[in-house]
Image (tube, rainbow, N blue to C red):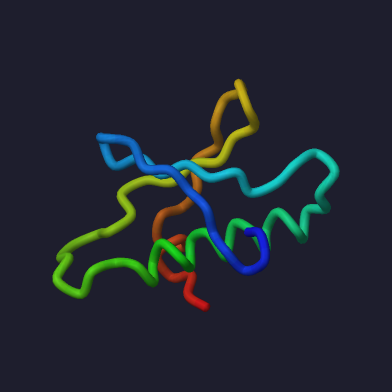
Length: 79
């Protein structure tokens, strides 16, 4: 998140991707960036959308296996 902005990409299948940190970042900074990213996604959910807006969540390093994240925790994140 640069200057309070959250930048992410969405592909044709609805997958969202965002860079939330680098090796030089502290764990707290990465957690803060992840929280800001998920909060931005939750804020942009249309009010007419029914059901679960976030179906699955995972985090990974570039070219490495991903780690699943509990989707209920992601849905509950709001700023």
